[in-house]
Length: 281
Image (cartoon, rainbow, N blue to C red; front, side, top):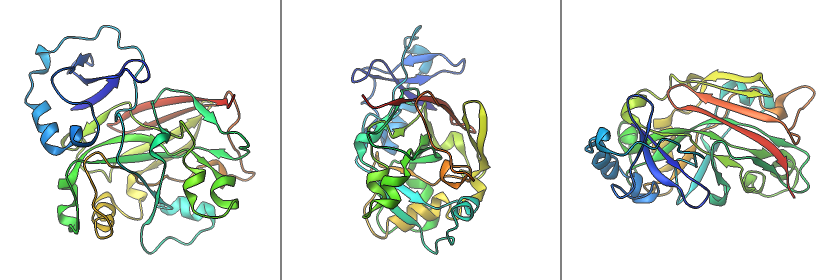
């Protein structure tokens, strides 16, 4: 299934795509897509609904983030071999885990706001993993059974804030609008193997990232199992699993976002999102 949220900011409704690509309104049939609303049980309950019995939304308008909110917004750093190489870093021996502020969550077609003082705002197309079942001390063999679905994420990054200002990476990752997510939450059964997905990002029509999740150093099941050794993952948690090569920081000369730039991101089976960068007022 492809689940989505549509409507103005703060007034989004849950929806589902039917076989013809029409948006059908799930209002009143399920909880909004957050926390237990994206648990394995909630997904199964939606699957039991006759989609064709739901009203068609003729003009859905704005598509919001496919998640209304997230308990935790986790990220994995330097998780593509070629990306680690372009940054000059040694491939990590264990997954690098950090947080993004949950307030960074944003719609897939909303503007990205370059934060005040930014000179090095950067793009990162990433496979998002949405947890659907509590995970604590699980094995790799069990890990994918705890995944509700997948989505596209632009893990926006301000490199000066992230790297040159001391402390952790979080403050370079967390500006408002720095987490465009969606357009769809695609259930795990429809995606299949998450390690065979093509993903790309175009900047102003030029393809700058073009790779596959098979270049990931740590696979989705390895990441989920590993994280569960240190924390309890909860339904609705989202994990951005790293970005491939082609980020602005890795270019020679380096290249960063300016107002008016357009980013278009795609992941196989998960759809496309696009944002325009605008200056912070």
